[in-house]
Amino acid sequence: MKKQIFIFVLAFLPFVLNAQQFNNAGFESWSSGQVQSWNSLGYMGFNLCDISQSTDANSGEYAVKIAPKMLPSSIAGLIGMSSFPVPGFLTNATVDMTGFIELLAGQGDISNIQMDQIINLLRNGLSISDRPLSIQGAYKYVKPQSETEEICLLQALLVSNQNGERTFVGLGTASDIVSSETADGEFAQFNMPITYLSETPADELIFIVCLLADNSQTSDFAYLVLDDIQIQYASGMEEPSLDKDITLYPNPTDNEFRINCEDGSDIVVYNCLGQVEKEINNYISLTPLSIEKPGIYFVKINNAVVKKLVIK
Image 1 (cartoon, rainbow, N blue to C red):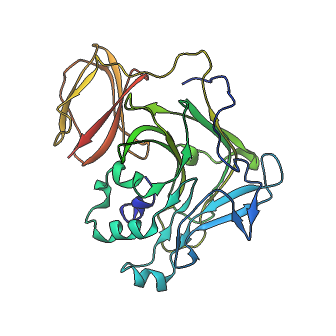
Image 2: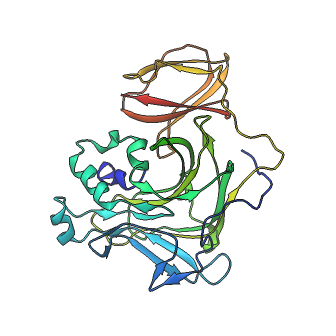
């Protein structure tokens, strides 16, 4: 089921500058039941997931509630699939639903879908000229009564638009929200540092909220209330940098790779959902490592330098 719905997806505190911020970041502006300046998943005039106004706000009068919803059987038949829980999905970008459906229908194993394919289906995010360091906000996660498994993903994609091409150059992920229900129904804070994978300047920021459910036998899903989203920038502080002396090779690779780094380094390999795939303490430089499943991964060395790894 996670493979079927995966396509709908994909450290320090700086001083805040008066730089670019999301429109309607506090979710106060609504029109005809729709949250302004934000988009979700829709098809033929139907809202495929649950995006609704909540008066349970961290500040102000309103917040946004995000939850999965079962895909109506009539729409499932039109796109040639069985009914399944559509993820609760919210983004500041426009969503190419036709492209999503075509890619979903034509992909044998959608876990192989590349990040560059995803960013071509999400466009017109926030135009940026500064270099964001992190995204912060308030959230409340409420578990369902039924026995079901969820993945709650908050993700920022940094995109460069140069020479007519869209290139994925940075990533921020907060994927541990479901690890503990927010205590006593209170709001909690998340902080999502941005990791840069290229020196190419980003000029677009796409923010994604995705709440996945893995139980097609219930309509009792978890939900997330989100409020007060802020982008953090630096002022006179050190910015994240890439260490050109650290290399991965071969890259791309069929499965085995090596890291040229200092002996004794701590290595963590993440998948595109921000989940840990492999963790090695006191790694010895050039020791062979392997990952079997194809896809894009991010290798963090000593909690500082991050390199992109492609498994073919």
